[in-house]
Image (tube, rainbow, N blue to C red):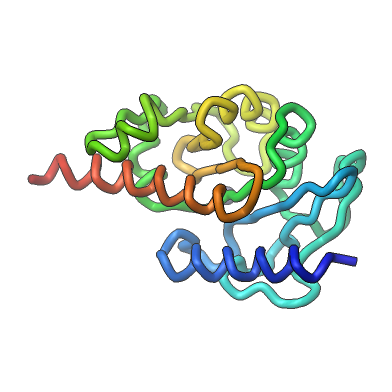
Length: 185
Ligand SMILES: [Zn+2]
């Protein structure tokens, strides 16, 4: 049974991501919340921007492959088992995806981006989706800033609550958007 306050917060954050154009294809992206030995994660195929009752799966953190959970559950679980973060959001943020395509860490060009990040970490991996390689590498990469861009795939943000993780997603996307736009001035 998914606690009502967790569902309501996931639904609110999903709508905010959708309204800012951070979801792209409707069924992409995922988010989860860890509470003790449980993790609550978006159901595979559910739409992040329009979550309904039944779209969140309750999993035991010991379970490697809970039925119905997002295909990125293994990445969320790896973060929970190897860091102190309590929530994870993953979104197909368009400018971060484009800026990560060369596989190098992303150096912000604007003042706010530089305030938040020295460099935004990029995970250059062979398999980017539902990937054991990402699950293995992401805990260390996400610790410094609570954010990582998986090359040509999307952003993962981790924090102690969903609003902070959402904010981190927007900070990464803002820095990447301005870096992209700065090249066309
Ligand atoms: Zn993805």
